[in-house]
Structure formats: structure tokens, C-alpha cells
Length: 446
Image (tube, rainbow, N blue to C red; front, side):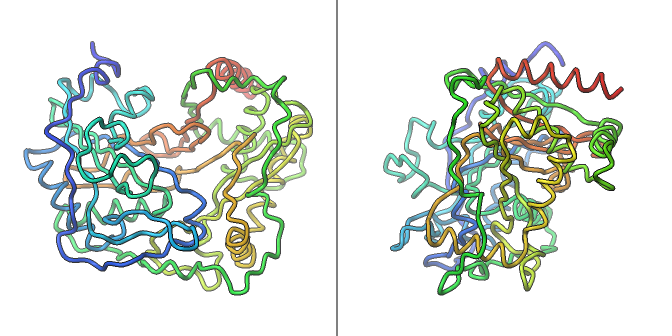
């Protein structure tokens, strides 16, 4: 790190000109575009940033022109969300386009660092938030919600050294992580004048609710959890959140799996199972939840190959099934780690075609989105190849999400991507306890 800091970027980043709308390069299909019930349950915007070491004078033109071209293939991104007659979200394919923003900062990229050394407030400035813009740069009519607001926005932030940060904001109802990687890689191919390796499969009616609906299982993913830890939990909703990264290298990951199997209940243990179980337990302990408080673990399981027949290659949308595991906090902490892993493993095994169809039908009947009360929400990106995004200036040397309260991410770390960066947010006082727990456990495993 040089003489600058993330705070310097926060105070000196400037928008060049005004945000503009980039429309598809060719006329695209219009009308209403169906969103499945797996799309309906995640209608929030999430943002990611990608750090590139170099570019050229054609950077902005290349990104804008290739965006216009990729929107021909992914035309729903150029539309606007609206409510259908039955009260569900659909895309009105208007062809209005996505938002493009050019920004610059008067320092070199190596003086700022990478994703892991950029604080959360600065990360939020590397993506464009339409609701923070004092001017209405197009006709959103003072929108207070996601409706009628572009579901995609892009910000390119240029540095003096020629490096740049590519910031992308999308509404989660449009796609999940797998589809996002596909979209970005296709966009990069267009930018490099290459043919698309994979075309998007756009028909989401494959995941339409059945008629009549048939709910065959109990769906804890929609369960409302009563908060009985108000007087005991170390969770002040008014306290500012602190976001931290915890790096688990291959040695630590192996130690975690060994610890999970030490009582010989388990014969095998995956990295995801061991790390998720460990982090869930540590989080409950740091929060000082009441022993009878139902703790909820919420995580995504890719359903593309679990659906019968499997979803087509290139399926564009949310193909992941959000699963939930429930357990009283006291029982979770007093039981061995193998017990927690068995809970997680049973949830993963239950994701079958019948279960996914039942969950889709359950939402169709209840229109109830997942409750996140007392919930540890995990999203694992450690095996998603975000690092392969290339607009013509090589792959990003660093990438990650703009923090979202309540969302914990497993990100790849290191040049060989064999380590995992656990990126999470907690109230500052709770984070201090959490860090102490991490340190004690690491010392005990060494």
C-alpha cells in the first residue's frame, strides 16, 4: 500500500459526464418475460467488482459497444421489472437498456490495493446506485422500489496507471452466480470479437409451478423464525456493521475436516460442509444466542442437474435451490461438529426434482419469501470462475462482492485459488468476539 488509502478513493472518485442508457445493438423481442418462482424469492440487487491491471484508450468505448451487443442475446436485461396481474414479478422487455457510468480517480491502482484491502464504504462507490443519484437521468419517476428501474448497471472506474475496476449491479431475480459467470464470459467474448462459446437458454417456463400445485414436503426455507434472543444476543441493530475477511488456506481447511471427523461419526467430509458448519457454530457463539433460539442456516444448492430432466446448458436465470437447516442454538453448540455437518448433508441430499418442484409450488400457494431472522446466509463462490472474465486486457487480478448485510460469502483466494476467503459482516462488537474465537480455534488446531 502506498500513501493513498481506500478513503482517498472514496473522497476523490468522480463521475465523468452523466450516466447513460445503453440499448441493445439490434432490435430485440418485446413483451412480458416470465420469471420462475426461484427468481421471485430473491428480488434484491447485488453488486460485484473486478480489478484489472491495465486497459487502453478504447476501454470505455469497448465496454459500452460490447454491452450493446451482448444485450441482443440477453435482452431481458434491457427491460424493466413490473408486477403481473397475479402479483408476481415479470420483465417488460422494452429494450430501454442498462445503465453505464464512467468514473475516474486520481491515483494508481497499486496505491489502493485489491478487493480484500478496500473497505466496504469504498466498494459501494465502485458500483452505481441509481437511488443515490440526485438527478433523474432518465424517466424513473422518483421510483422508490425495484420496479421500473434498470435491472443492470455498469460502472467503469479508471485509475491513472491505466488499471480499472469494473463494477456490476444486477437484480438477483435475473440470475444466480452460475448464470452471472456465463453472462460475463460471453460479454468478454463479444468485447474481444469472439463468437459466443455458449448461448443463453432463455425459457424459464421449465420451472413453472404445476397445475394443480402439489406441495409434498415441509419447506423450512420459508419458515418464519421467532426471535427469542433479544435480551441475550450480542446483536445491536443500530450498531454499524463491520466486514472482515478470514482466509482459510489448504492446511487450515484440512485441519477443519480432520476436526469434523475426529469422533469417527463421519467417514468423509467436504470442504463446504466443514467450513459452513464451523462458521455457523462460531457465528451463533459470537452472537450469544439464547440456547432455545432456533438458528437457521440458509444456503444455495445448484438444482440444474437435480431437475428431471436437467436444465439445458446455458440456462439463464436462478437454477439454484435455497435450502434451510434449523437447529436450537444450544443443541448446535453442545453437539460435536459432525452433528452440524450431518444436518447440512441431509439438506443437500434432499434437493431432488420432487423437492424443487414442491418448493416452487409452495411459493405459488403462499407467495412467502424466505425469512432471514436468526439466519446464517451462505453463498459459496469458491468454485465459480469469476476470474475468467476478460474484456481484452486480461483476467482480473482480484474480484469480490459489495457487502450485503446478513450475507456471508466463500470466495476463492490466492493465485492457485485453493484457499478460501470467508467474507462476512457482523455488528462491530460481535465481530471482535468472532475474531477472538477464530484466533483461539486456529491456535488449538495447530
